[in-house]
Image 1 (tube, rainbow, N blue to C red):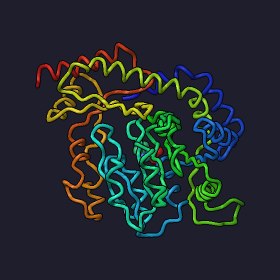
Image 2 (tube, rainbow, N blue to C red):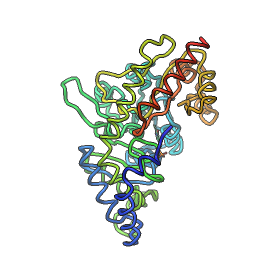
Image 3 (cartoon, helix red, strand yellow):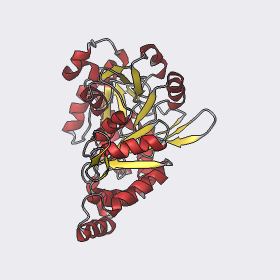
Image 4 (cartoon, rainbow, N blue to C red):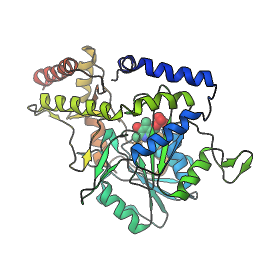
Length: 372
Ligand SMILES: *Cc1c(COP(=O)(O)O)cnc(C)c1O
């Protein structure tokens, strides 16, 4: 699905030198590159503050903790996401309140949010799934009306953007009260291990985030809040600094690969290619097709032709066993349930070349031509 080896070969001297410098300095925890990376990422995202942390899941958990929520408070998100988004809500004894997605963008259907807002609703977590922005303008307006915080789950869309109706364009992760991202190796900005970060513009919120990520402490052995231990390794920060400089180029390559797939599938009535919302600069974390009925057969066929593919996600969270206690039933979120049956993600990364794309697309077409 990704080709991290080729990507490394293209930048080996720079990465090797940065890693050696960290090892020589022995500043493995909170070393200089961590602070440098935080500043560079803040500049890139056009936010005042970035706090690096251990991974994207921690980022989401720290974000909720920084909001000062109480057990039993409610947090709205979608069931069609990676588990982290709902897991951290549940872990903090909060209640995940799900809202269905739109079938075209796979993102939260903003029109359905208002009907589930209660006095206990403290936050909304839109997920910019597969690299495409959720519809942030109406979502932010609704959240402001109801005085609810917005935490963007930007794990899959670093470098993506959203255009507001007045034409203003903003980086994803800079629109809500807090933005959370992940540097898991296969993400658009990926390290060579785990990593994550939170972004915020508000001074007080940024301070709370900084405290919580560091054991609730600003000054060694003095504790102002209950926190966690979640840090970005200096080695990862050194790698991420080198990759951040290339992120726009990586995302441009992903978009080019998506254009090529789109063109090759354009005449195929059996396939629905990814929709591109007019407000989004889509950074194609995934290239996800929809195919009715034959999805699993297509995946099997691709496997036989040595082409990897993935199902993101086979089971919506509201009907996953661990989340049964919240009382949702099959049928509650019909679009998420239908997408879970129809989606298939093809190889997508910054190193895909035209020949590979042609081979993958031809194999998909030979399946739809012969089996449908
Ligand atoms: C990857 C991912 C996360 C979690 O990131 P980790 O760094 O793996 O903890 C959270 N949300 C979404 C949507 C993701 O894709």
